[in-house]
Image (cartoon, rainbow, N blue to C red):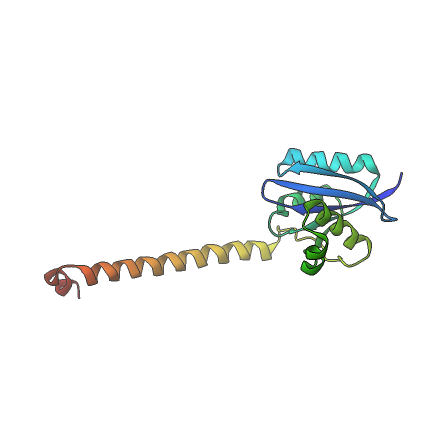
Length: 163
């Protein structure tokens, strides 16, 4: 059984995957929905092609977060892949399949070595708290601006009483 690398181009509703072997030969591609069932389909499809060496996923911190977490929980090696070079994309055209293949090749040639974000540690909890705090501060500021505007536009006698 040959070793394979799977590259994944992630999107909101579906992910496009391409598998290559360790010699760089393209073995096939698959589109899956961004659901647990889709993640299972991807893993089953890839396992049918060979022994999975690694998954190279674009956007493990955004659209690929769910897939990354699922694959990491199942014990797979998941690497975070940077977006393809814009100049290369311009020269060769934009294609989700080409982006997925490029992700796999960047793992194969050693360009992508960053471990995917697990999003389950203390830094992730702190990030969620910071997002909640930032949102609350923004809403408070918006409420203060609205109240000041109401006071400014109120009739003179009410405005004098509120001042």
